[in-house]
Image (cartoon, rainbow, N blue to C red; front, side, top):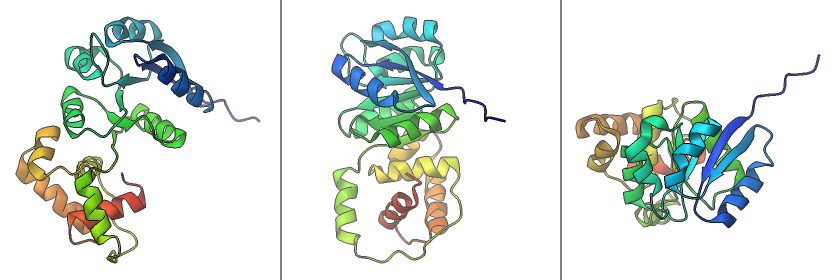
Length: 218
C-alpha cells in the first residue's frame, strides 16, 4: 500500500517587491509539503486575498507602502491565519512590535530554504518561530566567550515559553523587554531564565544562547 500524499501547507505571501515574491515562491515550490496559493503586493490588499485563499500560514513583509505588515496585524490579527513576519534586516523594535501584534514568527528574508520551510511548518503546527539574526550585543558576547567550554552536552527539554524566552535572549533583550513582549511579569521571566540555565546546564545567558543555538532550540 502506498503512503498517503500529505496535504500541503497553504501559504499566502504578501510583499510589495515582485522579485522577492517570485524568489520566495520559487523556493517554496521546491518543497512538496508547502504551497504558495496566493500573493498580494501590499498590506491593504492582503485581507481580501487571505479571505479568498484561506491559507494555513501568512508570510507578511514588515515594511510596505500603504499598510505595513505590523500595522495590518495590529488592525486585523483576528482575521488573519498564523503569521510570520519577514524582514531584510535584524530589527529589535520590529520584533517586539510584531510579537505584541500577534505574529507567530519573525524571519529574515536571507535565511535558507530549509529554515524558511521549517519555520512555516512549525507555525502551521501551532508553534512560534522568532529567529532574527544575532544582534551586535549577542554577537560580541559570542565572540568573547566562544572558546569557553559549555558545561554539558545535553539538557532537559525546554518548554514552549522557555524557547520563546531563549529566542529573545539570543536577540539581546533583557528581562524587562522580554516581559513587555510576552506579557508576564519581569519576575516570571527571571524564573524562566533561571530554569533555562538549569536545563541547559550553563551558568550565564551568553552560554545559554550558545547552547540553545547548538541544540537547535533557537
